[in-house]
Amino acid sequence: MSKVISISDAAALIKDGATLCASALTLAGWPEEIAVGIEKRFKETGHPANLTLVHASGVGDWKTKGTQHFASPGMVRRWIGGHTGLAPDMARHIIDGGCEGYCLPQGAICQLWREIAAHRPGLITKIGLGTFVDPRLEGGKMNKATTEDIVKVIELEGEEWMFYPSFKIDVAIIRGTTADENGNLTVDDEGALLECLPLAQAAKNSGGVVIAEVEYLAKAGSLHPKKVRVPGVLIDHIVVAPVDNHWQSAATRFNPAFSGDLKVPLDSIPEMPLDERLIIARRAAMELELGSVVNLGIGIPQGVATVAALEKAEDLLTLTTESGTIGGIPASGENFGMSYNAEAFVEQHAQFDWYDGGGLDHAFLGAAEVDPTGNVNVSKFKGRCVGCGGFINITQNAKKVVYCGTFTAGGLKIAVTDGRLVILQEGKGKKYVSKVEQVTFSGAYAKKTHQPVLFITERAVFELQDGFVTLTEVAPGVSVENDILPHMEFTPRISPDLKSMPAEIFRPQWGGLRALLDAKKKKALATAV
Image 1 (cartoon, rainbow, N blue to C red):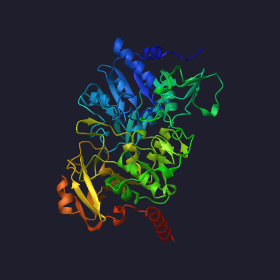
Image 2: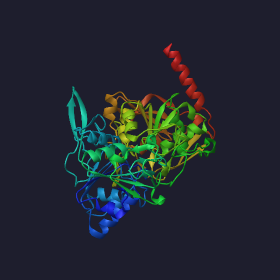
Image 3: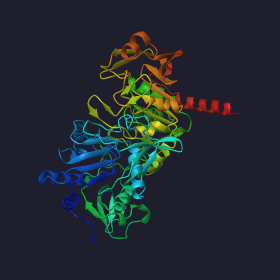
């Protein structure tokens, strides 16, 4: 009996009050056709209503796709997710109290599918301690309409742990490239493997329904068994959808380089102009070590990958993404989560296992707000519900965290003259504040675990020393009294060994990264001997 059904029949399977879960990142893995069908049915009939919508990663294209389809009043009663910044209507719906909203770490949610599948009580992890997800702070609650605590702090073997309880899944919606008539699913054209397998297992073992969206239908038994990522026994229904609703990322319908089917020449990467982004990326790249395993956040931190490629040093480190790519060069902007020339793909929950256990040597991420004790906020600010995504997983256990961003926000303009930085126009907003609106990274936790933490801007470098943000470097041409302190809401500690930022990174051409990494290796070997 065929498992193929129409989009209207698929939407009708979702009942009022159901817990609906998805495996996706941006538009990778997102069953857009199914989402459109659910929205259409709701607008025509008022059903399904009062859903609990759960997804680990941000889902959308910042415009009309993704979880934007669930933003109608009354459609969702409770949202649980890692990120919602890619779906602005849904984000506004949450921040305005249109539904209950819980933001939990991306890695914790995708790892929780395995606990649900195995009928274990929940996920026990250190991830989230000391952050806004900790119930002693906010418990992940994103608005006043959200009152119930759904996560706990427990003590086990004399240590504190976060506990994310399991729950019943009624419907899982997943996506692949091809399914055969028995429901066996491949993901050949996807740019990430994500966590469709454990989610399907969790839904089936909850007594729920699994609906898969695909581009192509194959004859039963014709797919290579090793290419099947989700076996047909776990899939109840298949929706065959147009390719226009199968995007690899928020910006790209299909690029064979993202699916690992093509290697592209990296010498085609354009030069970066000598501006604040290049200065920050160069200085951040100087923190690398030979052989570093690295994760890069979206925005300015992605410039570290570009600098490594331009400096012909990308072969000396391994760049990874939380979506599961290892090696190659992570794509930037709306192609976030994809990679060019990846050496391997692993499933997202497995990648977070590695991250959570300390597998990252360096994490380079952005920061919207920083306070005197090193707390960082990227999840909720200025009336925006953005979410943490994989930020908490990535930063909490990386061997070194480097925050990369401009010193002020909104309209900053700089120039570099004769190797000296000139501030032409100051940004309108202060990022170094007396108190962050939400604690996405805990400076106190970093102090407790002795984690090295740096804050790199175009004009200054700060370090978290003994629990306090400390100024350690100043750009050539910059005055501490005129260009730094007046634009902070607090006075940082100033290192007695205050240095100038390396002059060579303020030149049009640098060419020093590879030699720097080699020198670090030689020094380490000499010290070891």
